[in-house]
Amino acid sequence: MQYADLHSHTTASDGTQPPADNVKLAAAAGLSAVAITDHDTVAGLEEAIKAGREYGIKVVPGVEISTVYAGQDIHVLGYFIDWKDETFLSRLAELRRVRDRRNEMIIDKLQELGLDVTMDDVIASLQASKKAEETVGRPHIADALVRKGYVANMAEAFDRYLAKGAAAYVNPPRIEPATAVKWIIDAGGTPVLAHPGLYDQDDVIPKLKQAGLAGLEAYHSDHTPEQEVHYAALAESLGLTITAGSDFHGERGGVVFHAPLGARRIDAAVCDRLHEQRGGRL
Image (cartoon, rainbow, N blue to C red):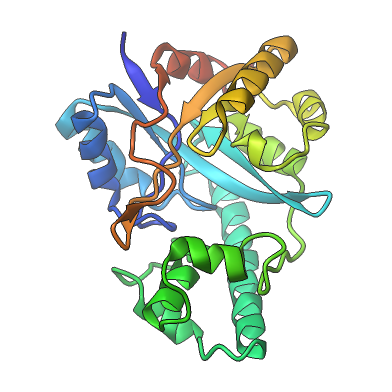
């Protein structure tokens, strides 16, 4: 059987590996396919697709869109999108502007807490300068906190300051997940709800199914075995495609963030199913 990891991040958002490296790692992990799903950007896709031809790996063009539902961050994955569609690119650019504002709000709260951290410190912690179409996220801020000595590691940065309910957490207005589903369908893609076990918002899933949601990421590195069983069964009951993803972000401070690429994988035939479901063709 051939396998796919349908959730990975690169330096185009908050991963630490260039897109080509993710593809190389997928080959080393024995995968036949990997999805590049950076946050609110498709800036890493061209490099990844080129690398896919080099390594004989199918690269699924994807994105992970940030939304809010009932005060909770909800992420919607889009697969096989037309990543050169001008309308879609414009919508992603607007999401990145919201993300930039969120980052500024986090920095303001950290400074209110007496931590001498600036956006310049965050930028200095990046392994490479960011292009306009790439994103800066909370892991980059966590890196700055570690470098400044305020926390020992990424986990402490999130637990104390950046995770939901932590001291510097903020959640500015964002689009709803149903809007992200529509945008992905408009761009000819297939929408899948990312890591539903992190939300405690199962009520949103049938609503998103009505909006055109095509799949559910039942198998994820942060899901418990019980959650994986639960969401696989829920997906089947709703007629949603079951997907799997490591949510690989690379290594920070000697620790792989979320899990190694390929740690969660699924039959690569699922890629064909997602391809068939493009643009709402269920």
